[in-house]
Image 1 (cartoon, rainbow, N blue to C red):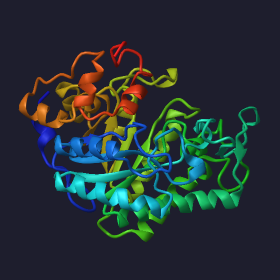
Image 2 (image 1 turned 120 degrees about the vertical axis):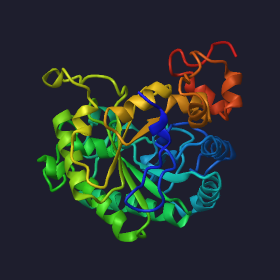
Image 3 (image 1 turned 180 degrees about the vertical axis):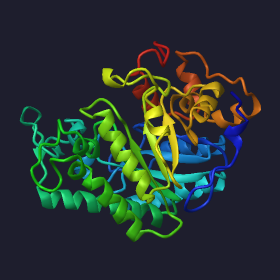
Length: 361
């Protein structure tokens, strides 16, 4: 495996190319203000990653409706009040030579109950006080994802990624376990996926010809079925309306959890799909240069870097200089994370991940 391919430019169907094959994952960091406006801490965190060599610098999940907030300190894109901070961030990322992407998100039933007393979802979950959306509210949700993309473009971002993974609201629509609707947004897989395709069409209709659009999917857990998500991915790729598909796999080398599909990597179910002009990337435990190169050698166009980018803001530059680069061993000191641009709020959040931060600091 060679890391040289990681630093070949990657053209996208729309807009400017990625200067290399390394994308910053959309990482929850809990650093923004309670009203969803961007904080100086979150601006600094992302600008450092852009300066560190990432070809595309993506924000954390940004909620498109107030009721869609999933966690404290979450970035928002549901109001024009968010534009000033986002505009400054987009300009800062661009000044560092990186493409900017804002991830559009709605937590659905996964909203923290301390924040959202009565979350919404495709179908009700009475024991958790989750209310089912009416059909008109589903259409409003679709329109608010589209409005979030329009704000991102107004703020000068190169593009957006639609978050359809990890059991949040769009993934809840995809899952037959959580989506028990009987209208045109429930029932068949085509109906359950309808809102995602309507969001994609809507974003394309209201943004410019160079605006970049990505979609994040996850193929397992949260009631999702691998064969169904593969079918959704195949149709998204066939329609050729997005620029990149970002598969969140938890571990790029893992096999499927579903016994029916064991014997090959989970990632291979997506790398073997015809992709036309759409670029394919994968995330999941890509911690060093060898891992990133393996993702490309296994059939992806780019690698999505999460925890390794928390540990080193300049992961791409370190890999470029050293094909044998490895991330620091875990756990790391809180002081190290501060040097890498994490605020105390972000470090506190990372302590929830077992074995990531040394105790006692």
